[in-house]
Length: 198
Image 1 (cartoon, one colour):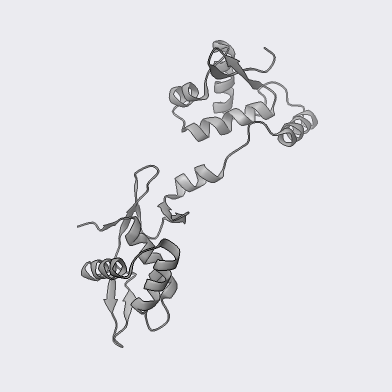
Image 2: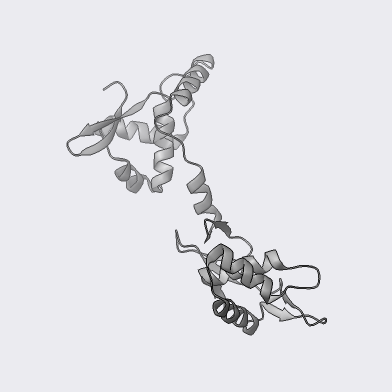
């Protein structure tokens, strides 16, 4: 049977890791950390620690103290994408246990309207003799060609048609904007990406 922990159980695991010393941990220290950081009650902490003991994740060592058993595997469900990830691979972000892919997607945003990025990209392309789509990745070239053919397209449509996440699509479009190949324009009620020279 696969052990999948929920959000509160993951919080307790994190508190146990922090309270753990060479000879184990005391529930009192876990209760203090869980109460201050997550607002969990004493009874909730005891209930979760008992649950973790039942599944073998927490055990009593020879000196009578509790300790986390690192040999027992467990999983956490990413609240963003719903993927089950091994307990040693999740990242705690604002109290949520998320997978590495969602963490990177959240933290690797490229600004669309960034004057310094536009200036540095223009200088780079000029110094390296790059014009038009030269120096772009294949996906960026395809996106640019599609935008030229369509005349104006929403980022959501690009995301769906090219099989990109919304953030990946925005990042690729931002790079095209920094190269001054595309720009935003309001068409009807929608904000669309259009060729820069249109």
